[in-house]
Length: 286
Image 1 (spheres, helix red, strand yellow):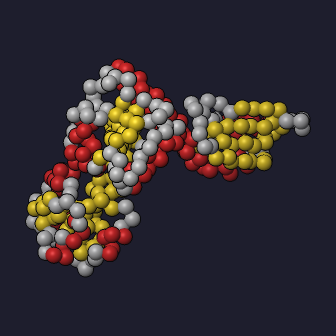
Image 2: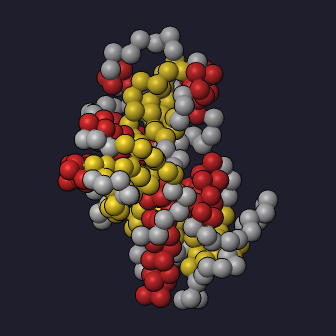
Image 3: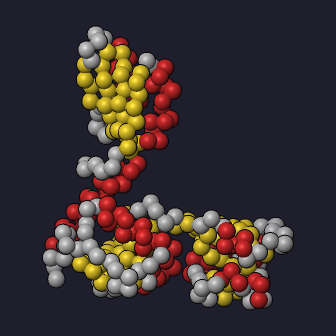
């Protein structure tokens, strides 16, 4: 069907929760009951496939799904021919090498000639090759952390978020080899009608992300300092300037990056800005 797109999403787990939250924030309604493997939106031309995360790159590459939300770690590991449309900013983690806590770690040369257990043999193999390290890679799925304690390997390479799982299994992180976050991927052979729908979805996602990373800033400023203050809070296009009842003063309204605002707040005060308010933006359409 050319008038509807299919998007593959992890069926359970944190990536699933964050992906579905983003889609709901885009105003797209759907039902995803427990155990449901497919769902269709009631107000947007999109159908959801709930899959294992490591199957998503293949489904998208083969055209079974038009889009997919997946971690970069799975995308690089599966090495499928898809387009990355957008980094989504959530489900951030890292792929790291870890060894038993009691072991001394002199550097990456530690792994030369060692056995390493991992669920990511491609990423690990590429990294070791780049460092001229010859190690034996044991590919296993699940419970990678147990490998050193049962004598299967001297070290592991696995996904790390907080590091608590490593600590509980008597391991320590020694090398970070890959950073990952959720990305939106697409099939390369979509027709024009489907691409038009994807553009609408991207528009909504961009609006949601912009709303999260930006703030609405209001302040009062002396007219003599307006040029300086405008240079400090340029806004998405330019600030809105409104004259106040008090002569010589104006109200300045702007939407800008939260990080940019906090970096410049002292300079704003020094320029005479008063009554500064920072207001969260729930949603914003560009």
